[in-house]
Amino acid sequence: MQIIWLGQGGLVFKNDNAVIMVDPYFSDSVGKTDASKHRRSEVPGNLLDVRPDVLIFTHNHLDHYDPETIKDLIGKDTEILVLAPYSVFDDVRKYGGKNNYVMFRAGTVWSENGISFKAVKAEHSDIHAIGVIINDGDKKYYITGDTLYNENIFSEIPDDIHALFLPINGVGNNMNFTDARRFCERVNPDVAIPIHCGLFDDIDMNEFSYEKKIIPEIYKEIEII
Image (cartoon, rainbow, N blue to C red; front, side):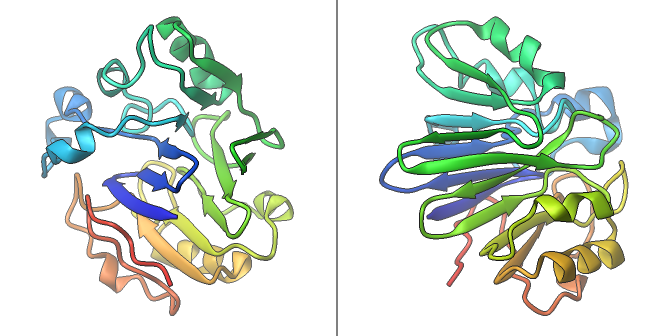
């Protein structure tokens, strides 16, 4: 898998079978509602041109489910698999078209083009928030979505996660550095990639102390061995 971090919780996964986009946020919608959260870097044009085969939303907060971003990705002529939790599902279906809208709740699995997607529990202020495990048939990638540390999450997580993507910013009902490290220790992935920092704040992800971390660079491919 080629993986690119889009900032905040946004990620793109690409292989020969599909382009998968998780929680894209390309606008300044949050900054328009909160002047302290204007985005600090513009999205490169090459990423704005990416057209996903699969769109996954983890919850209904504006930096994860952004109508201003979505209107440029979903249209009446697109044929996208859209995996959306209950809090997003009814709204995103309004875009209509030939897209396949799937209600994605914890425990739900969808398989397509040799890839399986499993929704898992997230503990967030959106009570319908989810994480997702992407299994490409070779490796498993776990995107927690926005979440706090919660013991009830771990029973759903397999013990062979290759890469774990998780928030560490410690506000807005997300884990801080300490709990994110504990989360990593429980999941025990091959590598952990901290995200959800840097677009609105000055958090230095290098200070995250988990030994098997990879620090991503926004809009760049994440090199995972």
